[in-house]
Every structure is written in structure tokens, then in C-alpha cells.
Image (cartoon, rainbow, N blue to C red; front, top):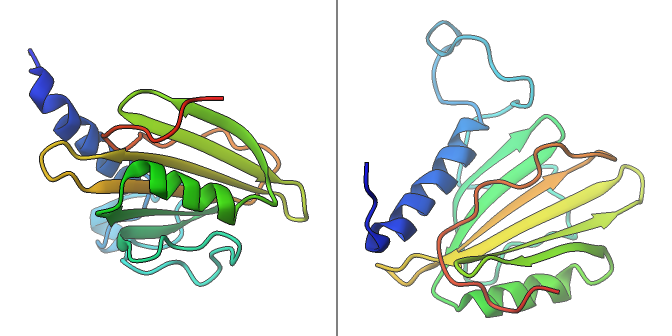
Length: 166
């Protein structure tokens, strides 16, 4: 199957949403759902889990599209009309007390990760990009409370990254 260049951002957005949805529990009964993945504890919502870390705020004026609780943390996808660079700068400032351990500019997305060795350890991953058709910016945040995180990097939102990789 051939994918035209104009369809790449839409395809990447679908991957982002599928990754978020695939990692969280669906709103089905236990019999219809089958065994739940080990990392899932609640269905997707548009509200943050009650134990979302206070040091990881939502983006001002951003709309939470989906959020969910995972076994070792949680995830959230937000949408805003602000430029990706502004979203990245906001989270860099808000998480400045944590250690920035990843900053990768992939051209269509920028992915960052921070760690905090406090007890319990906290890892925050952020992927930011824009949808080419709507020009909306998507921010995908994932938090985990473990020393190691095998699946931190969720598929990134389509778009243009803000700052150059370090």
C-alpha cells in the first residue's frame, strides 16, 4: 500500500491515538473485553487520573482529548492551537527541576523525557507535533513511577517539532 506524503501526518495521528487506546482499558464488560493487559487499571477518560503527579501540569488552554491510568503511571493526550515550540518551552519550564534525559527532534515531532529520582521515581515523556490539516498541536504525555520504563515512548503526534535536538 502506498501512502502519499500528504497522508503521513494523518497516519501518524492515527498511530498516536491507537497507541494510547491500545494501552488502556476499553469501556466493555469483562466477558467482552477478555483479559486486561497487566498495565491497565482504568478506562480512558477526558480527565486526569486522581493520582496524576502535581508537578506535571496540563497545558494552559489545552483540551484533554484522552487520559488514562496505567499500572505504573498514566497517560494524557492534549490538543491546543499554540505552536509546538510554545508547548515544548512550557513543559521545559514546568519540569525544570527534573533531569532532561532525552530531547529528540524528528522533524515532524519533538520527543522529550525527564526523570526525577525521588521516591517513587518519576519519569515523564512528552511528544509534541501538529496535524497538517487542522494545524492543531498535540501533546502526548506519559508518566511512570518506576526506576526503569520499558515502554515510555508512545507513538508521537504528527507535526513539526519546536526546538532543535540537543
